[in-house]
Amino acid sequence: MAHTKVIPVPVLGKRNVNAFLLLGRRAVLVDTGIPGSGARILARIAEHGIEPRDVSAIVITHAHIDHFGSAAELRRATGAPVVAHVADLGPYTTGRIREPYLPTGRFGRFLDRLDAFHEHAEPFRPDVLVDGPGALYEYGVDARIMPTPGHTAGSISVLTDEGDLVAGDLVATSFLGVAHGRPANPPFHDDPVGNLASLRAMLALKPTTLHVGHGGPLDPARVESWAAGEQHRLAGLAARGRLRTRAEVDGAPGESTSNQR
Image (cartoon, rainbow, N blue to C red):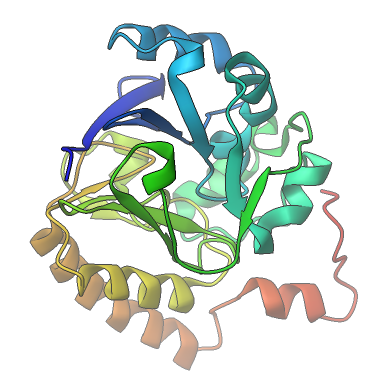
């Protein structure tokens, strides 16, 4: 088994928005930042000796603009196939995220008012659509794709054979990475209960480190403790009828199911 190194690729700020470079026998890029991030990402990976032609695959963890925004651009630059989950296909092919966002708290409600979170990306169709677990061995890294629905229906994580979990927005660091090492919800979840179930399923696999889309790496034990509190919080919201999910919003009378804001 070849060692697979997980290298953060900051897209905004020090760690406010991250992509990741997986380095094994070859190089795999996980996530692509906001629209227009391609040149920045390529410059960052070049610091590790990786040229565009060295990228063997681009994996997208989910269909939010800060994760798939530059996928089409980077596919052209690298020639690498884009791998993503079929349940998020709609936003990828339209370049528009599913709206409305469902904030997880006050910070999410604030961000929802910013135009940047409702930006459109260049549409693309993933070259490889997954609908279950899958291996990345053919792309030169010893890692597996793990479906982790909840943040979006098609959210996935990448688990290396050595135990590093590249978790997308399964969990985050507080305030988009400002509070170092402190687990928190990302600003939005389509299905908070489903996301927590996915997080706990990944923790049950005993990862060594969680690498997240917003913030620095997280300690699994600390995330486990946070998840217990989150379970209690969600139960309270559900008891008061204040827990919304994408399925409920899309099916509610008078609610639009389109991607329009």
